[in-house]
Amino acid sequence: TSYVGSRVAMDGTTGEVFIEPDSVVWADYRQRQDDYQQAIVLASRYRGTRIRCLDRELHVAANVGGLTDIELAQTQGADGIGLFRTEFLFQDRDGPPTEEEQFEIYAVAASAFSLPVVCRTFDFGGDKPISYLPLPDEENPALGLRGIRLYKEFKELFRTQVRALLRAATKGDIQILLPMVSTVDEFCEIRAEIESVRDALIADHVPVGPAVVGAMVEVPAAAFCSHLLARHADFLSIGTNDLTQYTMAADRTNGSLVEYSDALHPAVFELTRLSVESAKAAGIPISVCGLSAADPIASALYVASGVDKLSVQSSQVNLVKANLAEMDVGQVVPALRQAAGCANAAELRQMAEDLVTPR
Image 1 (cartoon, one colour):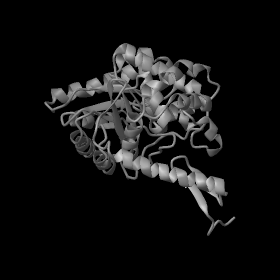
Image 2: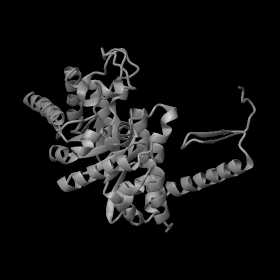
Image 3: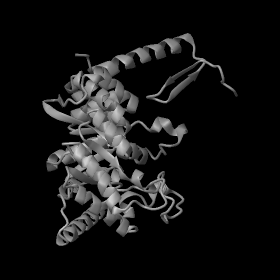
Image 4: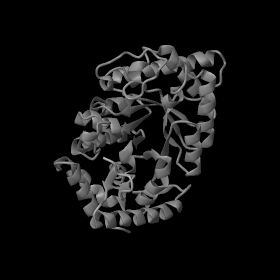
């Protein structure tokens, strides 16, 4: 079917598209457009500012994948980098970046911000193949050799990256984030490997910064064991995209399963809340990254539950700051106590929305 010349209404924030919408839908989308423009104007007032919620400072950091993203994060006044997807540095190449190439990029990121720059070590496999690496051909790559599981298979590649990160930590607050952690044992094993790399650099009189190492909570096992992980990690970061995918057993790239992809599903949210409680009990910081970190209601619920930092796309940093600063986040606290009793994400979302009144 050809839609050339058709009138289209599209919401770029949700992915919804209507071909030849009726007058009601058209009017709704016009209103959304006006509301968004007003939100952009309001957000511009928060550029470069720090916000406070529930009597504590909240950081809204940026997700980045390279130098261009780092510059944009700076321009938007992000509160540091909450997720540097370092595997992007390994893509579209004939071979892996050298230690020196990586060091230079990480050093730029570290120097650009006074707040932490959280670098997730490479997470290949699944939906992120690397042509020059002999990754196994797996029937179910999402449940295969991914994240932290790769580091024993590609030990020298990992050690090279860690050397670059530890050297760059002399330029600023570089923190290392290990992805796809499922067990406490594997986290401790890889953390020991990082310390081994650091000891070797020191022995060679190479300047290094501290090894600040965190764990991503993106599989249910990590959430259920978060109280144990928190004893060994310097911080936790909840990856809501994968946590939702693995909890709901629904491929997030499958458009026909979109109804299962809401991170506010009570099962997913309870795992998130459990992880936050574990971090708070251990006295370590915890952040949330993923699409839901920029969601107005979800972000309010995360902050109300005790999350210290949200990490979003650079273009969303000030929208998120404005939304939370203009809202009385404490109003959604009652929803935290009732979340487990909700039947679905829509019910939890509506409950929270009903509690919020504009300032």
